[in-house]
Image (tube, rainbow, N blue to C red; front, side):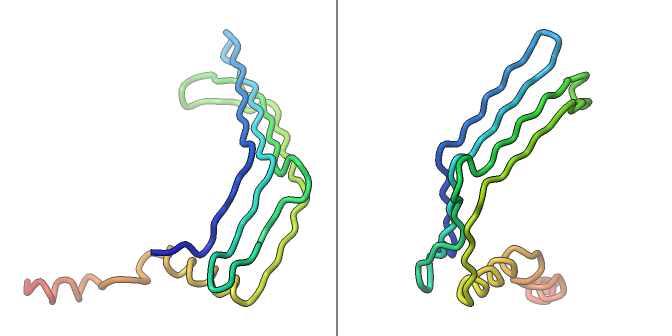
Length: 117
């Protein structure tokens, strides 16, 4: 088993304030992010260059358990530096193939025939 990519997050913060009237104010931040290609050559694929990398603030009303109203939302992204090499693209292709259902393993008819049913 090996990892093609690693993702590093630094200073992940979540701040939630809830009022007795069932309103919530949520502030979520990720200060730094970095994605590294682990093999064949180690390389930085993506790196945040400004802080915070992601800041999300929203205010919502919880009317019922499954019924919520988002009153206001603000989403800010910082700057990113991206490096795409041939090796990185190949690893992304392999990752995509491994995550798609039905790409690896036996088809149903092969399972049935091997089970002698």
